[in-house]
Image 1 (cartoon, rainbow, N blue to C red):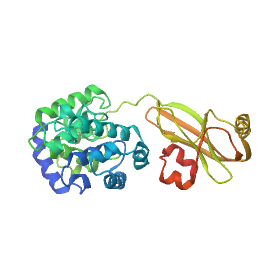
Image 2: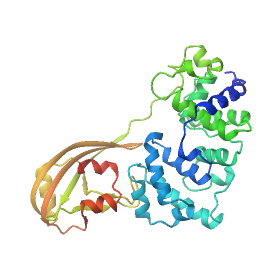
Image 3: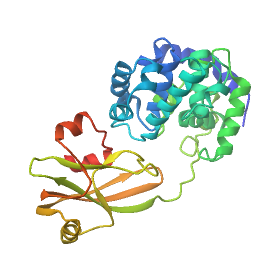
Image 4: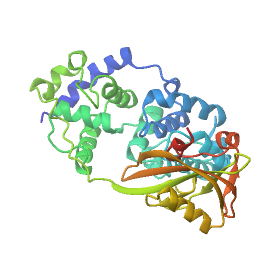
Length: 344
């Protein structure tokens, strides 16, 4: 590993970034609120997919005060489609704290930023460096990939110790243009040193300093050791419709996956049409027709839901569901993607 390579990549990387950086809405004025919202949205989501969500979010909530005071239901509806709804909830928690503790202004240091709900090391580094030019790294998957290739590192980049080592090295060589440097590393990882498929090494401004390229190791580096298999959970999902075509929804508990979100009624396990009818009749629901909607799966970080759906037309039902029209479901209630599959 040639640690000094990190010093040598700074200038060519910054020059490349100045020429090739994409025109993204949150890059226009380095506003810390806009940087913060964009970085939280970009977790687990591609840039192109985020743009429309970001524009809608900023139009509805242009200030921290707006974010702190919006009703949670409306906030979750704005976030609908991005998934990982705790990110939105933590945004509001942090906004309220910023209002109370920092007079509505986002703190301008890494150490203060990292104390806010939902802001980890990467996000704190991104905001601190891009908006306030603090000389701290922002290490995400793109940066881990680029740096591990440049230095020829064979450590597993999914391990916390590897991330700590790369963060420590970058801190040592962080230039005065800290924000641009961090964004340049991320941009290079997005456009050239890509996560899936063959990196475009011939167009890379760092190829003469990259150990993986020089030694034909780009297929071997970065090293990622496969994670443990996800837990499989089977669920039978019910699209219950009354005579007025209103749909039954209910609120999930405050704990676990999708906590506090609305969902279609569902039962643990894989039920047959007959078992669904028996369940509903036991609950004093008068069933007219049951139709199988198909099998779907939805993958979370550590869990995979294998879902079996039925549309059930009923005359009446005494279960404590909230009955809403299709229009209300589209406009008012945030329904996670896992359940939206059954509405198509």
